[in-house]
Amino acid sequence: MDVPEALYLPDGDGFAATALTIGPWDAGHQHAGPPAALLLRAAEQASGIEGGQTVRLAYDILGPVPVGPVQVRTSVVRPGRRVELVEAVLSAGNDRPLMRLSAWRMRSRGDAAPATAQPHPAPAGPEGSRPERAAFFTTEIAYHRALDWRFAAGTFNGPGPATAWTRPECALVAGETMTPLQHLLVMTDAASGISATLDWTRATFANVDLSVALHRPPRGEWLGMDAATVHGGTGAAQCNALLFDADGPIGRSSQSLFVEPR
Image (tube, rainbow, N blue to C red):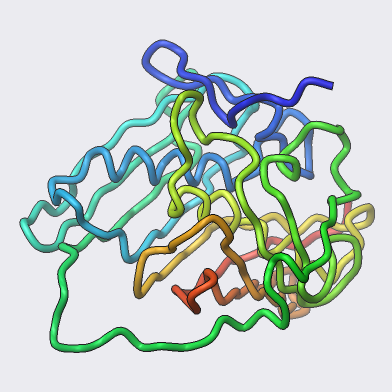
């Protein structure tokens, strides 16, 4: 079984999605984690702040992203030497936007406030956590194989909150090393998957957005999230996660879920 080396291959003025981007709802649609990372990559390349840090990422998921060719365009909405707002939009074969990112970036420097030191929330590190593969994907090669998953609490394959570590098993774009922040975006959209409370075969709970707020950039090979999903009983749910690396918390994520029976 040949596993692709990357989530995306360069393809003319865009990218060709590989089978590693396949999501859990439809084998023809991408999981939102890989295109979220691809949009982050484009936003940072468009940035005018050299060596800056991305502190907030707000994604709108406007439609299913097909497993195939995609294009990304960027614009600097609010330029600045210290603070800027960058927008990146993903489409597939036409100008209709399928995902949109609004990213605030800031100049990175030391300041008068020392870093807040906190331990990460996982009850065990990656070496002491349980390797696991998601059972609900319909194809053997899909998004779940892009990362090495280690569960410190909870499980992919059962209901309830979960705490998991991940490390990359592939590149984001072929020929490039996946950065820690790209890795974080590939992982974080799965927070609602690891903390699912509904039966995947009887209900769908796809997210329409993803928001990530960071107080510092992620570091190292292993990143983690402590995720929980809460249902409102009205067809909507929220998933929130604490994001961390081996040195401690780095930020939080949230997702709005549209819930309905299959």
